[in-house]
Every structure is written in C-alpha cells, then in structure tokens.
Length: 303
Length: 303
Image (cartoon, rainbow over the protein chains, first blue to last red):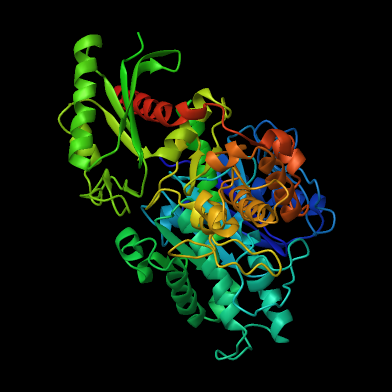
C-alpha cells in the first residue's frame, strides 16, 4: 500500500497544503494566505493535524518553499529560510516548525527544485532523470534535477541570477537590486513592466521589449545546456503563460546563440520537444512537495 | 584485495596509459604521442596487453578523453568522439576499440569530468561530493561532479562556451569560432595570445589584457555557483599555472560580480579555500581514468 504523504508549498502570497499518495490520489488540498511565519506555520500544522484525524497518520512530509533556503545537511540552520524580502520570514525555521515534532521522514527543498522533481515524475519531463524547470514570474527561478534528484551543493540553483550577454546596443540597466541586468533583472514580470511601462500581459506581441527578454531567457537555456545538459527544459510561470508566443522566440534565440556548436537536434530530439511548457500547471508546486515527501519516505525505508 | 585497474587519458597531443589499484599503488605509466586513431588506439591496446602479461588481468578500464564525446547510454555512438578538429578522430569509436574485446567493466568520460572525479577522491576536493574542475589552457574545460559522480544529461558539461557579460567598453571580439566572445574565446591561452600578441607566460602581470581574462573566468565561477553550487571549485591548466597571480584576480572579480547576493563566506567557508588550484597536477588526467575504472568496477560488482 502506498504511504500517505503530506506536502506543503510555501509561497510569498499563499501556501498550499496537500495530502495524498500521489497525483491520482489527492485526498485533500487547501490554500491559505501567507502571513507572518508563526501564524502561517501554526495554521499549516493545524490543517495537517486535522487531516490526520480524518485520514490517519501522515507517513512523510515534504516542503517546497520559496527561497533562499539553507539546505546544507551539516548546517545548524538546515531547513531555514536565509534571507528574504518577505517581512518576518528571515531565518524562519521551516523544517523545525512543520516537521520537527512529527517523528516521520521529512524533506525540504526549493519550490522550483520540487516542481522539477514532480514534472519528471508525473509531468512534462516524465521518465527523465536529468531535466530543468524554469519559472518566469515575479522572479526567474530554476529547478535542476540530475540523476533523478534535485541539485544541491553548497546552495540550491539560483540560475536566474546569471548575467547574460546583452543584445548589441541594449543598455537598459535591468532591475535586479544585486546585479541589475542578470536574467531576472531583464526578463522577470516586474522587469518587463518596468521597461515597458505596462505588464507583459498587456504589452503588444510586436513590442521591441520582447526581443531582449527572449534573448536573456535564451542565454539561460544555453547556460543550462552547457552546464548539466538537461534532457528537457520546461519553462513556465506567469510571463510565459500570458504570452505563449514568447516560447517560440526563446527557442529561436537559443538555437541562434548555440550557433551549431552542439547539434541540438541530435542531442535533444529537436528544439520543439526540448524546450516545452510544464505539464502540471498550478499543481507543480504542491506535487513537488509530495514528490519530496515520497523520496524522504523511500530513503528512510531503504536504510 | 583492491582490483587492478587500467586507465587511458586521451589527449590531443599525447595519451597516457596507467595501471594500478589507486594513486598509492601505480604500477605502470606511459605517455605516447597522439597520432591517427587506429594507430594510436592499437598502440594503447598493445601497452595494456603487455602490462597484463606482467601484472595479471586488468579488472576494469577507465578512459578519460578530450571531447566532445557521445556518452548517452542509449546512443549507437556511445563512447565515440563526435566532432573534433583533430584529423581522423571524428566519430572514432574509443570505447569499442579500447574496451570492446576485453570483457571487463569499462567507463568513458571527458578528461575534465575524470579529473574532477579524481580531485574529489584523492586531490584538492577530497571528501567532497559536489565540486568542479576547470582547466584553462588551449581551451577552457569544465568537469562537474554532483553527488559523487560526473554530470551527464544529454551531453557532458561544456561550460567554457557560456557567453559572459563583458566589461564596459570591452569590444574585443574573442576567438571562439562558434561564439566569438564565450569564456573560451576570451580567456583560453590562444585567446590571450591573440589579444596580447604574445603568450600569457610572457605577458607582464600589469598588462591590461589580464583584467578581461579574469572577468570572463569570474563569470564562469559565478555561473557554476548559481548552477550546481559546487562545494569547491578547482581552477588550473597552463594559463593558471604560468600566472599564479591570476587566481587572485579571478577570486576578486568573482566576489565583486556576485555582489553580496549570496554570502560566499558562509556558503563556502571563504573565497581563499573555495577557489583553489587542483591538487593532482599532471596526474589529474590519468588518475581520472583510474577513478572511472574504479567506479565501473564497483558498479558491476554491485549488480
């Protein structure tokens, strides 16, 4: 019998709790608005506890959280948020407050690493062991799976902050407070809005603002291909969803930038099946948490 | 008893054969000049066969080769060189010709992935499971270890070809035939020589040519930190060895570029122990082949 798993997706505006054994057997799902950490985490615990009374004990808990997170196993701040602009959440002990008292296997990772894992298990990267998940929204987040598990060295991937080469004569400074014209500073929703004076969903498809956006995202794809060489790259988030034609521009700019150095068709099976929208939609986050729970349960069972 | 392992490092100008059970027990080592593929691979086979008559059967073979290589397990060209400027070597079946007839476990990977593995096992990244190895020489090669094994998705890492942001007003076009001003096109030995009109080893330390070289390499480090976030980054190769002061400039430019977005001291233990020269010197390549052989032997024993 499949174990009953709990999942929590922690986001800047809302948190989603989920209970089930997998995507075909979701027993409960509830979104609550994100407030301060103590109130929010207490409410999430109450939701999970109520579900346990109804469905029986949760056997593992997965947490997919917006970052940055300290995920170094040896760190005294393991499972804490490190620095964030969200009031009160700096240094919040997520894993301790949600899982510490439960006595079941647990895991925490970034929301995008979780989403990448879920897409590989149940979504548009199903069956793959090496793939990437990009979300282009209020920021640019990248989740990276290598050999079936999310990447973590001394930190989780933060590829939205690489500095892409700019289009000739494009000197717009970008809006990242740390880097100015990193990918996030050039291609996130707020960056597009700042540059265009209106949101991307209102901006005409022939606006000259789209070209540098596509170019920056294409540099991110090239970097991914040259780094861990994902078998597939999924790219979604609010900016992509509102402007589906942007995907074609990103693909074109990516192929142009690689410039024949690698045979993309041979390596990937062709650009149109290589760079794709995610398959799980709004469920990628909560299912990411569930996938993390499943892996924590399996790892504990194996030892 | 430790298994007797054979290793072959295949390079553009020479190939090194090695026999032993590990770095403390190297029984044989021989360098031969690289000629055409058939003659070279036949000679390597003869060397290995002679060593077997002397020392007994080789129990696994590892090959660390200059790339690009097809390493997709499902590919009919697995273990072949794909495209290269080395005459005759295009499409050469390395794994087939060196290991096909031996009936023992074998593995092939890039020379830099092998070197990264060896540095993690026996060198300057000893004990780490997530680290990177950069060589700056005739090209810029990057080996990447994640969770103790070399990275390979649909391709091996090729991070020397990312396109770094340029220093303000630096418009030198670079020499990469595919990308112009990618990291390799800006910071490899031939790039430095093309820009300066003399080799890096002759170029004064106060030459203005060094600043854009350090800047390009720093962008590569930033990309690594934001991608798989290695626990340590080793950077060597001819350019670095001839100009040890370049390491300090690269570290400085790297810290400046990250610009406080990540707390490098906290994450890595400090820049001076984070970005280091490799520890194995000229043995990194052959020991990389031996490490690949050891892992192939262990994987076969485990199944």
